[in-house]
Image (cartoon, one colour):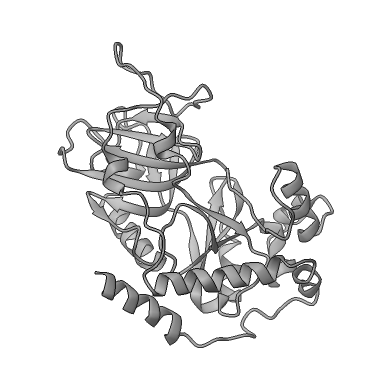
Length: 325
């Protein structure tokens, strides 16, 4: 399996031709890119991460099976409407550490890869609560980035309901909003692990699984919460321009950019980028619908990122870091 993965990653890295003009770099982008060492450092980290993955030296995610099977259930004083009432007599135990920092998080996209148009995928991300959804032992539990439980319920996910087989389990990276879990990524499905596979393969398998189970997108009395995919496209200027025009039933928070070869690793990744919708014209020369244009409040992309980092107590813009809630 390791040799196959290395071969696939190498093929993905070597077969594509660089198209440096595909995005038609915006004249103002040079001002954004050269503000600090952020872009240079991000590009360096990105190259190092790809090399580690190609050489099979990437850090292994905690055994997914250990995440899926655990008797301990943690509570959360700030649990939202996703949390259903616990059964009488069930003692809750603190288990924050096990599920903390298991999500793969993004960085501000301050360095624009030369191969963005061929090697990357843009994903529309809803406004909501980022969470790790674990379905096993006949129940489904959602954990926030800190590892706190924010929801426990029955779902149609493999392993996520009382009729599930004992050895069946599923783990998903989601955004929870208005009774819906929007699925960003696939870590495991029905006891099959996918975290070590490249992103584009994980997305292919995720789409296949969701298509095979359309009932996951339907709310019923026994299965209150639904699971749905989010729109995405290859990062060519034309496809991004069309995708951002999509009429959505939910509020768009931002745009995630995944390198097609990235494996799923906990923590922030230089191979996962993040921009606000209104930043697309300035940073990538991609036009946007008028409804997004006023969200900047008069700030440039660089000014907004600097303000965000200070407000959320991140490091300086040189780090180019962000965490999506």
